[in-house]
Image (cartoon, rainbow, N blue to C red; front, side, top):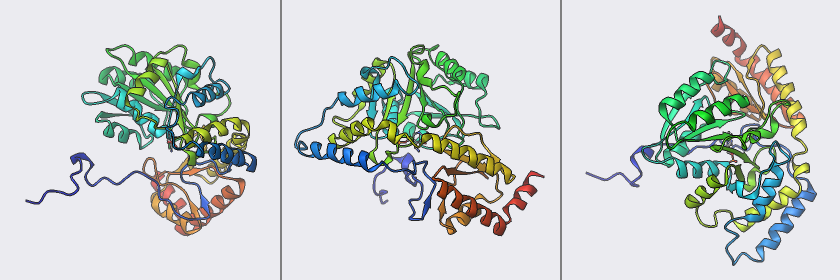
Length: 379
Ligand code: PMP
């Protein structure tokens, strides 16, 4: 008998690594990045900060990244939060790493983590990597949460981590504060209880009138609000995600983090970026307006579109979504084939990129006659 090589964990055999195709096409609307890069001034300041850090790279960085935590706390207090202090902030290399650390600290064998599908496809991977059972509830037809059913599932399965993206990826759906409060209370009602992570990766794009879960931090001790610099902050390449929570939660994560996990270069970059926050976030309003225009336009074409509080829109339904995705790609526009069968997701780009998207979609729908097929499916 020959042993399988390499001797991978049984449950990882044959699994493809997560990740959208990275293709070199003119219009890239597939991973919800901010299409506007940093200004020359911001880029120069970041370069200077990194240059200064370079002179001390023989030393390990500040393991507690104190200055960065202070900067992030100050930013959160201008972005829906109040009274957030540095000891209530934690950061890592992208919010993916923040959430993996949460699963490592609060999940584990004999425990489970829960979310509601369709949702971000990395969540079950964090659970798997932290040897945590994964439980999936389901969203309603319009992708909202049925609060009674959600609460009942939490009480039945007693998860130690509940992951609630708001706005949700790939649907764009934000959660009302009542939902967050109800699930925090449910997760605090059993022993030892669960933490409720509201993943606000796209929080800055929420429509006016949609509150941030940061407002609920003073009320629920088991609430964690996760954010990232990858989206609104236009800094996906820097890899900086962070959270706000009770200091005891931040302290607990310190047990599982690797020592010096945030490099001196990352810390310098993020601190410089925070100094330029208003400017880096300066295109958020334009992107929100472009999103609303895109949603309206897609609906005018007779397509279904999920309401979006994020920088992307989920639209469909196509009998053959892959053909539509391919048709767009053939015309130089890369979007994402994700979400429930029949739907596609487009990230919001610049006005020119969205014009290219509209043109490519119209041309694809004509040649593929997908509209006809969608109608047939609906009939
Ligand atoms: N949460 C959600 C809902 C996301 O869509 C993403 C990225 N696509 C992330 C978290 C992770 O982003 P990052 O690691 O770049 O912060």
